[in-house]
Image 1 (cartoon, rainbow, N blue to C red):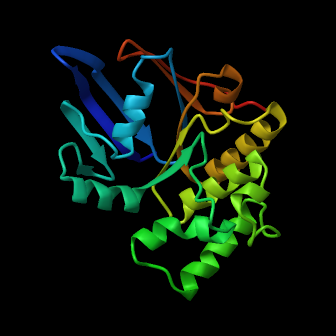
Image 2: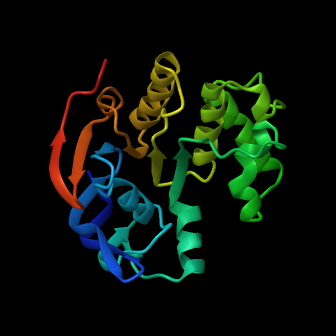
Length: 231
């Protein structure tokens, strides 16, 4: 399969007063289009730092990040924002929905920021709401939805720009086990349809839904292996 993103000798240091704290220490990974990767590791292993760099929310201190054939390692903030809006969809543990907005309006938010709201994109947002099982909740606000339904809104919002990669940061962290399974089934269906998904999780049973596991420790790749997806 084609490589959609890769990082080469990626280093990220944080300056804490007079102390330099290394978060990533020379990480090299390639991510293939249509793959489903779980990033795992203990607290402080560097998995969230790596996800932030992959999502163009942060830049590496050193090394290279190639996204869709382009080196985006040291782009300006404006250029990173443009790349992020074009290639990346985000799913967060805390959903990050706007309380005053309806389901459809929350799905529309990325388009609003890009000045791309029109009748055609509104129809697409409604279609995405139906895709994630919320066709009968279009006018509901987040407070009228369960946690699982709110995460479904977040997944639809992540899809609205037809991104190359979906990044999921502990997407089931606030959900009970039954609802977690439902969300993971939805992510697997998206992956089966060709979406590339990179997910941070600390739970082995959630990682079991992925096709590949990358384990980090102390800012380095400790293990990288493929696995049979959970039934």
